[in-house]
Every structure is written in C-alpha cells, then in structure tokens.
Amino acid sequence: MTKKLTQSAIGVALALTATSVWSAGYQVAEHSATGLGRAFAGEAAVADNASVLSRNPAAMTMFENTSVSGALTLIDPNVDVSHVGPSRYQQAKDVAPYAFVPATYVISPLNDEWSWGLAMFSTYGVATDYPDDFSLGRSAGDTSLISITFNPNIAWKANKHLSIGAGVSAVYGVAELNRHKGLLALALGGEASDKLITMEGDTFGYGWNLGALYEIDEKNRYGIAYRSQVTLDFTGDFTDHTGVAAGLTPGTTIKGDLEVILPATFELSGFNQFNDAWAVHYSLLWTEWSKFKELRATNSQCTSSDGAGVCFLKDEDYNNTLRWSVGVTHTLNDQWLLRAGFAFDEQAGKATLSIPDTDRYWYSAGATYQYSDALTFDAGFTFINSKSGSFVEDGETFDSKGNALIYALQANYQF
Image (cartoon, rainbow, N blue to C red; front, side):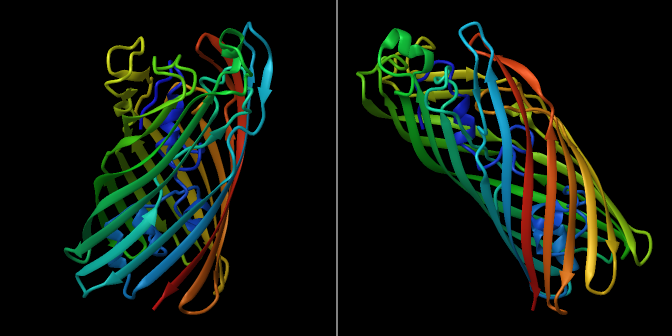
C-alpha cells in the first residue's frame, strides 16, 4: 500500500489494523464475551471456555472434551474531536464508527498429555471517519481495516502442574484510506470535501505465540503468554487526485509499498478460587509499542519532499505500555455465574486525528448461564471512559474526548 500524502499518513496505521480504537494505540482486546465481563482480567489463567486460546495455548490441557466457543462483540464508541487552531473552530462528532468483532475457538484433547486448538480473532485495528469537509482533511478523512488472525496451536501437559503450548499465526488484512483537501482547497481550488488521496490494499503477515500454565492445585493457577510481532507488508493502489501529495500527474494510480508493525505482547495472569462462591483473577499485559516508529510508503515514481522514491513518511512517537486488570467471579447458583472487572489501559502513542490515543479506564460486568451440561451462554458489558485532552497535528490544535460502550454475546459447547 502506498501513500503519498505529506503528514497525513497516520491514517495508514489504522488502515492496517482492525476495527476499534478502544485499547491502547490500535490494539483490539475484545476476544470474548467471557473476558469482556471481567475487563479481561486473568485471561491467560482462567480457562473457563475455549476463548482462552486467544491468550494462552498452554491452557488447552485443562479441557477433557472438545470445546467450541463463538463470540460477537459490538463496540459503540462516542469520540468527538474539535479543531481549535488559528484557522477556525470545527467539531467532528462520533469520528470512531461502531464495529462488530467476531471470534471463534476450538479446543480438542488428543490424549491425556496433548491437545490442539484453532482460534480466529483480531488483535489489532482501528477505524475513524471524519466529515469529508473537515478542515484538516489531509490528516483526517476516513480509514478502515478488517483483519483476521488464524491461529492453530498445540499444547503438552508436562506433569500435573505444568503445561506448555505454542502456535503460529497468519494475519490477513484489508485496508482502505481516503483523505480530502480541507483547508488546502483555499490554495488548490475546488471544495474542501474533494479527495486528495485514496489508498487500498491487502496482505498477509505471519507470527507465532508461546504460553505456559502452572497449576498449584485446581483452585490456584498462573499463566504466562507471549505473542510475537507481526509485520504487514502492504502493496496496493494509491491515487494522487491533485498531484500535490506525491508529484504525480493528477488522478494517477500507482502501486506502492508500506510496512506496518503489529507489536509483540507478553501477559502474566493469575486465578485464585477462595471458596465455592468467589474467585479473583488479574493480569498484566505488556505491549512493545516502541517498535512502531514510522509510517513509510515507497514507490520509485514518487517525488515527495521526503526523498526520492518516498511517497510518504510520518514519524511516530510510541512507547511500550502496560495494561493491568483485576476481576472477581461469583458463583450465584448452579445456573448463574456473575463476574466484574476493572482495567487501566495506558496510552501508547502521541494522539493524532487518525489514532486519538489516550489513557482508558474499563468498568466491566458479565454473566454466564448454564443452559445444560454441555451448553453455556455468556454476556459481557464494558463502559470505557477515556481521558480528554489536546494534541497538535500539522501545526493545528485539537481537543478530543470520548467514551465507549462494548457489548458481547458468546455461546460455548462441550462435546
């Protein structure tokens, strides 16, 4: 994928990931309704259904029968951005559209020691959609990406206490980016809503994951999990509608290359069952955001100010982050299990129009209904409150504020 737009490419970062801006940077945490109900606390250790495969493959050894889980999450954000720069005041409401995030998991034991599983979910993604006539259209516009991770895994129970697991991942992404003239229309002519550049493309990236689970006993266990970095090398169509962004003939479409990093993660989790009614769980998730340093699009035909063959170059200011979460589970009776959780999600990078990143606070609740010995249903809900703040992009000042409501439903079946 290529882009030739001076200083507006942060949108490319989102175009190369999935559907939500409600974890740090462009990370997607919404892997299950069960986890959502506890703010994803203890995800690498709880192992209450097959969705644990999104975090820790070693936990597959806890399942005595083939287990299947399917989840659907609705993310309903409310993000407003105001342009308060010297040129004018303008507000863009609901710049992050709602999104559906599906996930499916299968875990099956081979024997008393070995198990296998397959997960399909999303780990990174974001989408923003500004009005076409937004003043800083060259940096705002609309961007979207749909990504799916296919993740087969295997696990081995070394002894009654320790299990280890590993997997490989194939990540498929489809991205689209549109930018508009905005205030540039004063110099270029035409309307503010006229397109400046468009991009679209798709690609595959590959990675791997490892995990371990240590069970002191059936009521106390701890998990660790690592998921590797995935590099998405996009090659796609870029159109320079005005000839300004990349020095091309107006309306020219060329092929371009863009590399985007999906950072590695490392998680520590614990689960402790105090009695028949109450359990507590907790997690610390580290994400290697420092690997995301720039967005660089290239094609030999480009003649931008960033250098020969460079269509676009945007430096990024990201640092490694920690996300911590705590939760409780309460067994109400034979049919109902209740859960709740809280999480603090640390800001990963400097806020921009395309990725209005900030600190986030998660307040979560959920429940499981035991329909039969084989079938259970989960529901989860989270309210996310984001820190309001100001940021500067392309010499203009913006204020942002927002929150989000996340809903999820899930079905689990054991054969």
